[in-house]
Length: 84
Image (cartoon, rainbow, N blue to C red; front, side):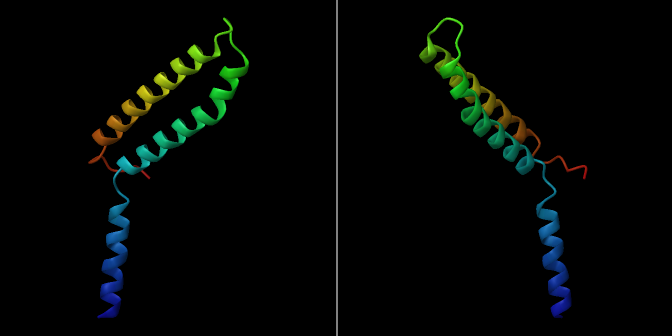
């Protein structure tokens, strides 16, 4: 009886990981965090027109739009299964 419950529990855990939505959301969060950690300091130091505030604001806006698009794509993949 205990073995059967243990096998059912393991099966439940493996089935929980089938959705690609979580995988996409994790990639979206990583990309967003990297854009803030690495690109903003570069934009604040090196600009073509000297206006660092405008460049940073544009970059933040683009990063947030890309994040929202990424999240919507992950929601579309809610019922798609992982290939690996």
